[in-house]
Every structure is written in structure tokens, then in C-alpha cells.
Amino acid sequence: MHHQTEVDVYDLLDEDSILQRALQMEREGAERFSLVTSGRGINEGDFPKALAIYRRLARETNLKLCASLGIITVNMARSLTEAGVTMYHHNLETSESYFPQICTTHSYQDRINTIKACQAANLEVCCGGIISLGETMGQRFEMAFTLRDLKVQSVPINILNPIKGTVLENQSVLPALEILQTIAIYRFILPEAKLRFAGGRENALRAGFRLFGGNQCYFGR
Image 1 (tube, rainbow, N blue to C red):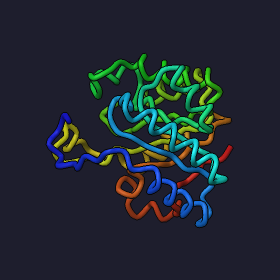
Image 2 (cartoon, rainbow, N blue to C red; image 1 turned 60 degrees about the vertical axis):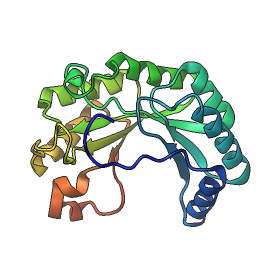
Image 3 (spheres, rainbow, N blue to C red; image 1 turned 180 degrees about the horizontal axis):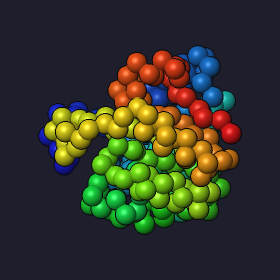
């Protein structure tokens, strides 16, 4: 919408296609399954469709259901809970002090309000952000303390993968050692949380990624 990245735009997948994919993932050993949309938040027309899909997934699979639908209200969060969703993913992206340099379509408080809405609806929350956006080390820790104050227990740590056509296409990726230092200090700030080493890890750590392996790395307590 905002950058010339030649990204294709798709409608929400149909119910049968999503169910078949979920059943396939369940056969292959997955424990969780999520619907993910892009943009500020799911539109009014697609939200009832998503609820119907979740109800069917809850009936016809044994998967734990997750959602990542952008900014939502507490009533929407409660509807997701009633439909069988147990976890909501919604990243802070960065610290509050650096957020205006990254996003101008909504406020940092909008993101925090979504997290609190989900918690009020008894949804578990998966919430983290992206490092290597040009923020300082102090701003990374600022985000970690915000996550601690929000009592988030599942924290994905993503690393910027610069995309041609975006404002950050020429942003230098942090050195591997600084990435690992950041994660290590997150462990001290968030001693009880599951730290999930998520997007951008292959590009950022290059050959060093072999030390971690797997599809997603967890930094244990």
C-alpha cells in the first residue's frame, strides 16, 4: 500500500482450503495453527468469515488455534475466544520512543490497547518486535521492559530483512554478535518468557545460524 515492492494482494482464503491445510499440518505434527492477515487490522467483512473458519477448525481438528489479525477491540477478542482461539499474536514492533520513525498509520498505544484487549478476553498473547531497524540498544531494552510490564510470556524476536522498495531497503543489518547480545539481555529482562528467534535470522546470522538450526529457536529459562 505504501511502498513499491510488487507484493501480490490476496483475498482471505476460503474455508475449505484453510481446513485442508490445517488437517495437513496436524498430520505432520503441528500443535498450533494460525490465520494471519496483513494491514492495520482485519476488515469488517472478513472478520465474521474468520470467526466461522475458527469455529470449524475447532470442531474438526485438535489444533490449538492462534490469530494474527492486526489491531482489534476487546469485543472482537472475546468473539475470537468464543470461536476457539487461544492465542493472539500482535507485535509492538519496536520501542515507543522509536515507533514514530517506523510507523505513522497508527499509534503505539493502539498496539498496546490490542494486547490488553486480548488479555481481557483471556487470550494468551504472543508479542515481540523487530530489531535492526536503526534503533539504539537502549531502545531495544525499552521494548523489552514494555513487554515485561505487559506480562507477555511469548516473545518473538525478529531481525530486519531489508526489502527493496521500502524506506529501510538500505538499512544495515546488525552484526551477529550484537544480535546475540541483545537476545541475551532480553533473557535477563524477561526471565520467564519464551524467547522465539523468528524472522530474519537466516540472513542476519548467515553461517552462524547453523549453531541454532531448526525452524524456530527457543531460548529457554
